[in-house]
Amino acid sequence: MLCLVQARVNSRRLPKKMLKKINGKSILEILVDRLKLSKKISEIIILTSKNNSDNPIIKICKSKKIRFYRGSLNNVAKRFYEVIKMKKKNSFMRICGDSPLIDYNLIDNAISKFNVKKYDILTNIFPRSYPKGQSIEIINSKTFQKIFLSLKNKNHKEHVTTYFYENFKKFKIFKIKNNINQSNINLSIDTIEDFNRIKKLLFYSNFNAISYKAHANNYKKLF
Image 1 (cartoon, helix red, strand yellow):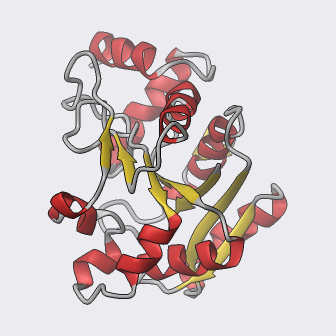
Image 2 (image 1 turned 60 degrees about the vertical axis):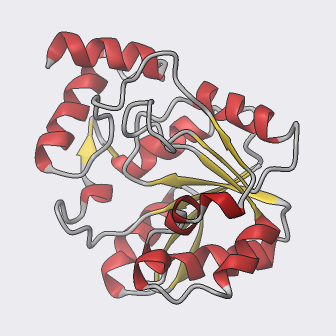
């Protein structure tokens, strides 16, 4: 499975969050390390922009030999479209760069389910029942290319999968649901408070790639 990670430096609420370090590693590196543990991801590509502000992301990618692609700053969907066209894969996984605690077992389980049938999109956020920061979406490449050509809404171009959810009756969607609703638990980074929380969780887990369930339990203990 091709894994595409969208990342940029100029995030609105916490600028340069991808570059912030915990125990000597940037958030981006921690995320990629987790993704590399997957047995079903064949390639990881960081999708960022051509804007100079994202040069530090490229610097990390080059130093750590992580593949990357640079495209439009605001039209994030176009970045995905261009890479999908270039790679010619039947499907791809979308992961947000602000999710350093992503559970690779959750990823592998999702890929296995997607490969059973030809869905337009597999998702665990429609509705959300997993913690934030454990969001997984796998999309059929042909379906995505088709809808991209008709996207006119600025919001749809920036938020890659919103169109699917707003027009869910048009698509074959496989929804993964958690056994219990943990949508109130935040394991992603959007603010400085989130960053400090993730930092504490990583130290508490001794930087081991533990499951999302273990992180959720630690979250309840610590916060």
